[in-house]
Structures are given as C-alpha cells and as structure tokens.
Image (tube, rainbow, N blue to C red; front, top):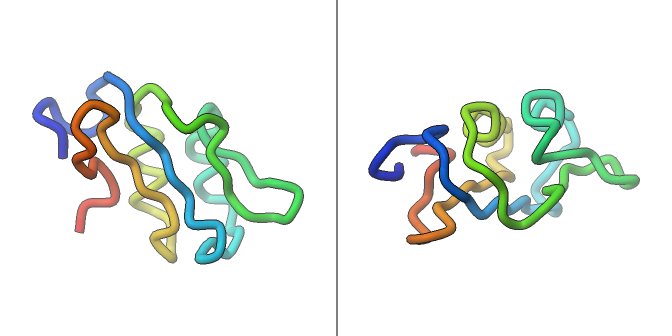
Length: 83
C-alpha cells in the first residue's frame, strides 16, 4: 500500500497476467478507464502507467484469479491486490 493509501492519487503501474486471466470482465466493468477485455477475451491494461483510483484498486482486488497487479510507479510498492 502506498503511504497515502490505495486510490489516493498519483501514478501506478498496471500489469495483467494474460495467461492467468480467465476473462470474467469484472475488472473492465469496474475500471473501464484503465482496463478492457481484448479480442481474445482476456483483460489488458489500456496503458502501462495510469492514474491511481479506487476503481482500479477495486478491480485488482476483485479479480478471482489475481491476474491484475497495481504498483506505485514511483516506488514499485504493490498497491493492489493486498494479500
């Protein structure tokens, strides 16, 4: 978690493990400004660096296979999911 906490602003690095992804679409529905389902039905980040948001944190937290990770762009510290 960042010093200010998840969803508190700043920039984050968004990564999706497309092999692990099962394409439920929960993430894209929760954070459509940052994630979408590709033509293959699997999630992908719209950009590698995005603005931190509560929606993006929630999308990573609710992924049933933990395919999404959100890290602080400045420090590399994992913001979501929190284990």
